[in-house]
Image (spheres, rainbow over the protein chains, first blue to last red):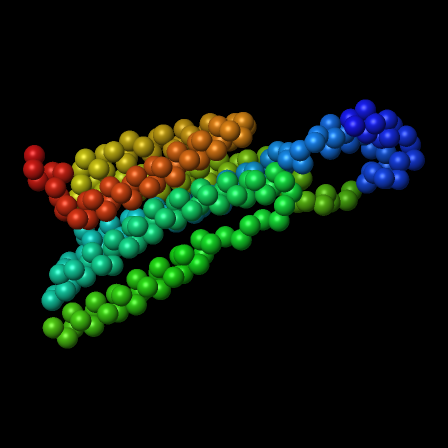
Length: 147
Length: 103
């Protein structure tokens, strides 16, 4: 298969190939039986930066949750208020970090196969949890004001 | 002179540099979390602060063209570290100043 490929490539009028100018593009990887190959380094790096950005988001969530629990004065009449708001944010931080790694792997695999990029679930997780925490903080504040 | 199809081709080193900076930002974020923790939980904060240069070094290592297998393992290390910080934070949230009070 490989030999045949090279022979065909050697012919100047090979209409089957996408190199009209007969540029000696690497015939090696294209002749491999598996259609996986390492993607362009720039794609790998971009994927890595996305992973790192999600991890910084995760750290910000953890520190926000920790700040709510430890630095905020307690809500009057709502002793559980700070934990109810802070702990979900910290847990979300852990979830975001793990999901970012899983998605980094999926993206890397897709790049290697030149397949379409899988859709990310992270924005949805983030939106749902932050909306929930916002609603919960409104409840905590209301309960605290009533008591 | 025609511009290349991809603007990245103008300076191929830019992508690597952006990635190095992203690693440094991540390490700095780690250090910031450690400092915040130090205030209430000195032991946990010191642990997180100790991991900061590790992340920095990891970034330098990875950006110098690590093979795919090792790259995967090093990024997993970042996730393990961030998840570990979250676990410590949850424990700290429930035990309060347990780590220092019982000493």
